[in-house]
Length: 102
Length: 243
Image (cartoon, rainbow over all chains, first blue to last red):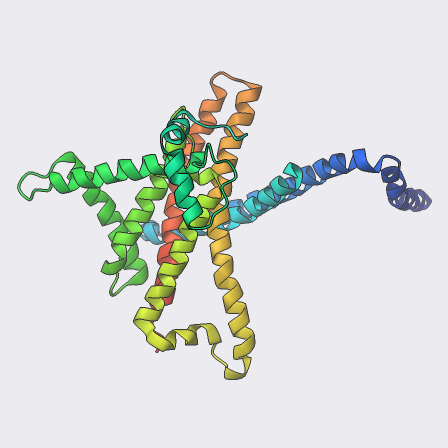
């Protein structure tokens, strides 16, 4: 219990200290911070997009296995859903591209 | 200076003067008077000429007794788009088939032309998908107004009258967001596909980029389909009568 408390206190101290780290070379580290943010943002977007697309595809495959006759309808909705899910990740990509390229 | 492809350079060498004067006539400031034609416009021009040749060839070889290969391909496209729009729009879909097939062929050819060495996809430049999305936007609103008349405004107002000012704003924003999402989806897919191929080419220049090129081929076809599908759905929503 005590160990955990110390651990979280250290974490909190580190969190407070982050602006201090960032202050010393503000101009140079700006680009670095943007790169880090771009990586993290794209990772979150791609990961969640993959999770969602996996769920959608799994449901579509299941539906197709239960009722192979409904193939055309399911296919249309699957493609549509995948396109909508993917476009969210692509919005992130475009925002990152605008931010990094500036 | 932006990099120019060989065909763009050829066009700029011959047509820079007339294009400049045309742009000045419509009050557009020309940033680079010696090269006013961008890569995207040059590639679009190639696609335009190819499609024109295709349509002329289809028209020339049209025959009932002995349909040729070109006629078969044109009939396949027409049948696919017809079936698609009949299942979504339903009654009165015939008038949209022309626009939707042209849209599909145009986008497909623009996406695929990037796979030819020495050429690039015009759709990986953001203004080209924006243009297509705006044309689609105007087209479906035109047909919505044409088929519903003044009652078209009811689609924006929602079911409850006292919520209608709020609903109107939300609907306007959502309709404008359709243009944004159509644009960004096509643009970002094509652009990201090119970028991924390039990134793997810089890592391993032999063999591996081929996998991503084939992935890009699949993405090109699917994005064409998605764009056409969404245009059909927006059209069907616009022309639907509420009873």
